[in-house]
Length: 331
Image 1 (tube, rainbow, N blue to C red):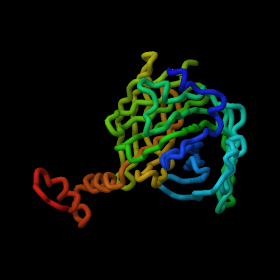
Image 2: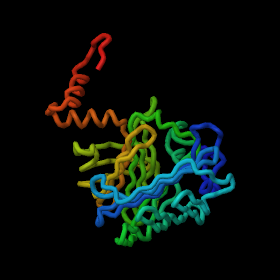
Image 3: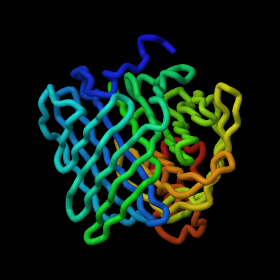
Image 4: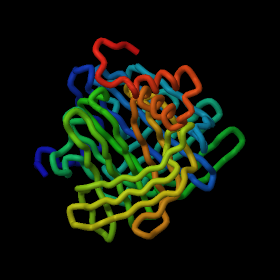
């Protein structure tokens, strides 16, 4: 790793961004509660003009929304930092650097009180071969941990004591560079933790992330993927991943179903965030699979999966599929 990209305690705090419209800094905190058919995303960001946003999302099995809020363009002080960060109904307080954080929000009948305690060292994508792509971030850290707290949905109060994931990125973010990606987080208690990003952007095939097991963290060097999907949501119904890391370890992950799914827009893509139980290295665990697709690709694949071509939309997709080599054709 280049010493210039090595993480420091200051990297757990806010960075000074360039004035480019593409520069931003973001934090995301996740957890899934399969026994409750629930997933939670807490996300906040800020740009170089000190304009901040936040999103909270609580969702159920098949894109069911229990609650959601989104605020954008809120002015924040240049001196505001992530040790005490409030945007709209969300507050984030980073504690010991790269170790713990406290996230809360309350809006529209939903509330979250979420405490994160790291179980892995913070990992930067610059630790991977080739480093962090310039369109993705100047730098980006990923970290798995224990998460404890309560989730409130109306009169329903759900305490949790489980595992989850967070990331923190800063610098240039160009969503238009991405053809397709999947960002996957897996934990089995405090002993096994995995994060990887896999897909394609510009002329790059993405293989980023880490395997943390047996007391050692190692960068991922290869990922194989086998995913089954439903037509309704074009999201995973079963998945198998095989990872190889720089230590030569082979780690297999399998999931036979999802317990929560949310589909939402992200930078011109359609983000499919799904999660549930899995098996990792032979042990029970939790998995979160976020996939980013271009919406028109999803619509075309759903039409082709139907194979009935009974609607005008499906027939239009079939015509596109058959149109090979024509000159000046329009669809």
